[in-house]
Image (cartoon, rainbow, N blue to C red; front, side, top):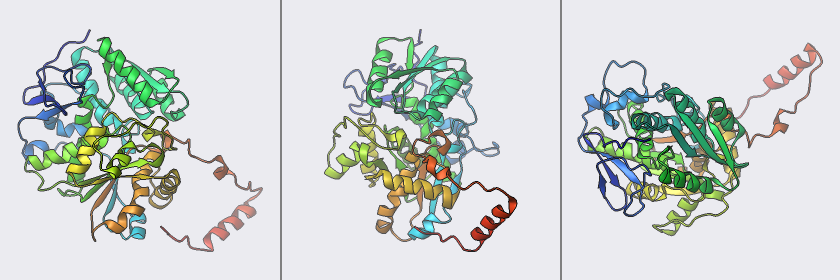
Length: 421
């Protein structure tokens, strides 16, 4: 049975919509008054030395523990997440006339996606609460991350996934880490509504989707890392894929905190990118609407963002508009071209959803001011999802002897490969 935990001292738990405050965690993570999402607010400011302590060795997420809602003595459930590479583009940026283009490669996290940032914090809180079974609905990355961190914490986990809509590599991770995988007919939105209902009605289950505000606290650390890695600079633009919309909300929260605490003097513009076949937030933004319309049958090769009714849509629209950013959609064809370019031109193998920001740059680049510093968030590693990979690409001649191999090598060396947009 869950223990009703009080919100840590120095923090408040508030409804994003109506502002109601709570002294204890709300296990459904929804406001009982209006149904809005809850958010954690740090009530005291951190200075730069407290947020960025010196001589702590390798950069990891828990370096920023003073900005996380735990007492100093709490032992985190961690696999060494965070500290992912911020890679300067060598070729793609040049082709687009962008000299300050960086890719934040979240595929370097322990289970291969940004979800580990939120999961380390949320599972740490779940263990504090006495939770026994952690549950989530997932398009894949959340299930893999939850399974790994549950195993690390010595807790049981169950993941609810839509039939035929989750990459096998991600499911394999969940199974390997010992999670119970429940496959249901329907899409992700159906799986999530069912999971939320179970968690709200039975305190045996602890919900781990991105409406859990502790997940958001972990994911906001991307902002802190980018700031440090750029030499205490704030980018002009953050461009990232948007599915259930928790990540754009989290990263915006991190940058807002840096400014509110006097550590940074400004915030970036947030650019949320969706797949054209699953873009309710981009649609609402284009219409100037404050409300999204649910897409009943979202369809895209980018499985991680194939979501028609994102739970954090309101927070995402707020982040985009507060930051003077924008939301946009790109086609599957554009995503696949961008994915190939990241691998072949920059050496970064990402899943399809992670390539959406790069695909968006073709539309954004002409609008950006000269010298703009742009960071694209690559949310997941390419080996996790190969549903868009064409086996025919592996079809190649089989050489019978070394002379044939040498002839082929000479053909390759006879011309230069041109770097194009």
